[in-house]
Image (tube, rainbow over all chains, first blue to last red):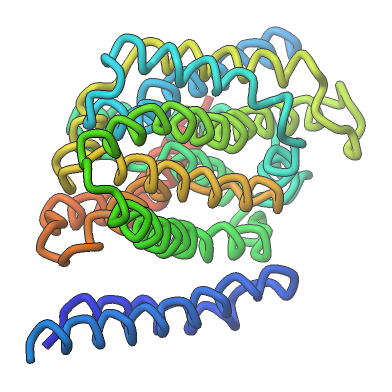
Length: 53
Length: 330
């Protein structure tokens, strides 16, 4: 299993969990980071799969 | 008598800024030293210069957050701020001698909160301000990590077009001077302002300036001078931990890490959020290190760093509360 993808997914979960705790004016930061980390997890997984075929 | 106490605590605040310099500011040069772009001696001069001129670039939003957004203003007194500073300085010195890259910023926030709670209970805390700081304790390194990773992907894509790796590395070695300067600028912009915030809180508490006042220019200049002097005096244990023990960096990685850290610090400073520069650069170095594989990051060292982060606010708060309790007896 791709540990890096799991790490990024974990980071996405942490960022998502902080959305509600962040003040309204800065909420785009955890939202944006959640999206970025999900994309990085996906890209990392695809990269791992392509090299482990 | 009150004036003597005020100026003594201002001197201690500037001493804290100095300890912040040798404890935290040395992180500015970790990657430049690790990649041997500059000698340690030149690197500290470079970082200190950018620490100092940061006041020309950033407004004092972070200072306002520290002065007005962490603890209720009517609770702040010379005694509370003194106890908070002592708590933060003691915590900084302990972690410095243990070689742990803990955050001076969070030690300061923890110290002030601990002393204020010891004086007036939990109602002294501005929960919205503390919550904003707490959220960015986690978000700032994650921001840095993601940005550094993306920068590194771009750099590698760009680098793949070059057949001469040595030539490419030479280019990045020069670029690292720019990225290290930008990071030191961001560091000065965020960290020196924490001391400015403390001094502003003191001036407001003693009615030397009105509660709505901005940071006086003499405070701005003295805070930047103190942090730059601290940077000049070194902090090699922590540079070693961050620069070479978390992951091995090449010049391209150094540029990516510092640029990402600078971008993160510019963003948070513009929004008045005091963050740890140590957290931020560590996240960036981990981001660069994980570009190839996660095993490139030495997680044992990174884990030690995380423990230092977790313990910093409560540790400094407990020391400050004890100092305040002793002061209150007299």
